[in-house]
Image (cartoon, rainbow, N blue to C red; front, side):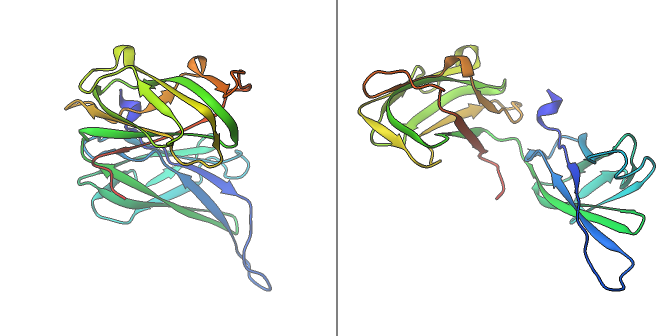
Amino acid sequence: MKWRYAIHLLVLIIAGCGGGGSSSTSTAAITLTAKSPVLVTYTSNRVQAAFPSVAAVPDGTPVVFTASSPNISLLPATATVAGGAATVRVKSSVPGKYRISATTTVGATVYTGSALVTFIDQPSSVQLSIALQPPVGNLGGLQFSILNDPGISAFQNFTSLNPGFFAFTNLSSGQAPPGNRTNVAAISATGVDVTSTAALFRLTYSIGANGGLPGFAIDPASILAVSANGNTITPAPAFLTSWKYDTDIF
C-alpha cells in the first residue's frame, strides 16, 4: 500500500522573532517532520507544508523547498499555500540521507527550517524492539500481541533482554505470523521493576522480496500485566516500539 512509503513533511510555524534594534525583519522557525525511511524506488512521496492557521500564512504564499543533493527531485520546487498547506512530491535516484529545507516569507517575517529524510533499498529483514514506559513496579507477568503490516514473510528469532524474565513467543523460526500476529508472554517469580525505556524484548522478521517497509503495533486488547503477587496491574503499561530495517542508513 502506497501510504507506507510516502514521506510526509509537516511544516509547523513556531511563533518567534529574531533581531532587534533597528532591524525591519524578523525570523521564525519552521519545524519539518518526515516519515522516514522510504523506499528509493518509490516515486510519489508526498511532502506537505501545513501551518497552524490559515491566518499565519495566507493562501497563495509561495513555499520554496530545496534539497541538499542533486539526487533529490522536488516536484515542484515551489508550492503555494492553499487552506493552510502547501504540497510537493520528492523522490531520490539513490539511497542516502538527505536534508530537505523549506522557506517562505510573510510580510517582514522570514520562516525557514529543514529535516533529514532517508531513502533506502528494499530491506530483507527488520528488527523490532519493545520497551515499556516506566515506571512499572513488581511486574510478575506480561502478555501481549504484536500486529505486523503485510510484507513480513517469516519470523526469525526472539530475545528477552531482561534477565528477570522468562519469555517466549508462539512462533518458531521460519514460521509466518498467522494472521499477521505474534503472541509474546513473559513471567517473573520475583517481579521485575521497569525503571527505564531500555528494550525488554527484541524480535527479528524476514521481509518478502517486494514486501515494502512493514511496520508494527501492539494490540491494546491483548495486553495483560500482573504483579508478582498475581494482581492485575491497571492501567495496563504503555508500550514503546521501534524497528530498524537491514538497509537503514544512520
